Picture 1 (cartoon, one colour):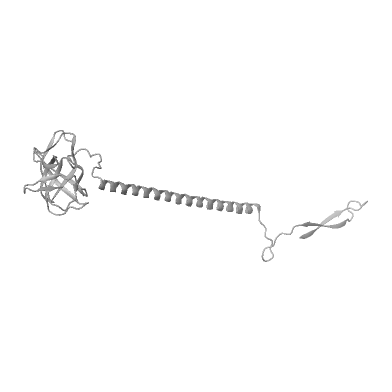
Picture 2 (cartoon, rainbow, N blue to C red):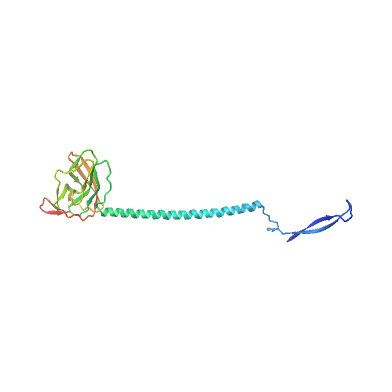
Length: 242
């Protein structure tokens, strides 16, 4: 604590104006200001104090916003990762289901004659069959009468009758605007004299020809399938099974 003298002038009783007065000293006490290094008194204005407080508050708010942003980004990344994992699992499951179930079908595209959802039975034998859906969006009927492929010596259009396969008389006709189903136990495209084993995942290209001589390239993917046990009586007099 420090103090400073204060001079107080009082006029003596009975003294007239202009006379010498008696001066008494009175001490006034006040808190001592803190001194900085070097003995100088350090003072801080109100504006400086408020400015420092505002800076502190702004820094606190910035830290809070940054923490919230990082937490939100972390949550978003987790959700995206979970969604991507679920999507990948669903896609893998669907792909596996399609490869195991040959009857899986999707709506055929419009505008071209072709084989959709086409697949061929994987085999190491000299015969196999092609299945799928033949679609004809044209305004006229299309009749397929023959075919060819690089993976086999010949292509025949077959049907199953009485548990045995036989060539379709007159070819396969796909009516205008309709779809002809090729399936095990029914109509199918037969590959005779397969030149090398066809394994699951291989793509086989077959070209069908209609009655007017126009050709239609078709693509089928090889799948593992046990088959319906149909028999085919070949020209060598022996029954073959596919």
